[in-house]
Image (tube, rainbow, N blue to C red; front, top):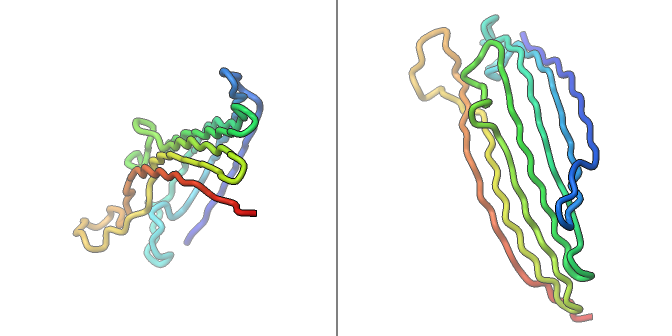
Length: 158
């Protein structure tokens, strides 16, 4: 017993001009039906594991040159899930999202770059080592966030 039905729709367009940034936007809406929302073995799937849910996403991104040598990239997005049968999996109160800011500056033989990014997302979590009464799902959602940053200099000796 298992199945997945996915009906995606996306659209993109120039959305906003803010200072030197021309932001493009992309939005998406997915309607999903699954017979195994907890992703258990097909032999363990039951009728209670059916779920209908929708995922709405909105992304803004822009890359611009501040001068002939410096390029800045901004990328951000948000994603909201709304479940019909499993309200414990909804994230409408605290949506998933991401943010990225990156720059590159070309100084003849050197390229100086830096990046900072943040992402809030979820992973499927197996609950086999935790006692859960019959009839309750053995899969859960582990929500986490990641903050990354980097910087450096590349040198070309040509």
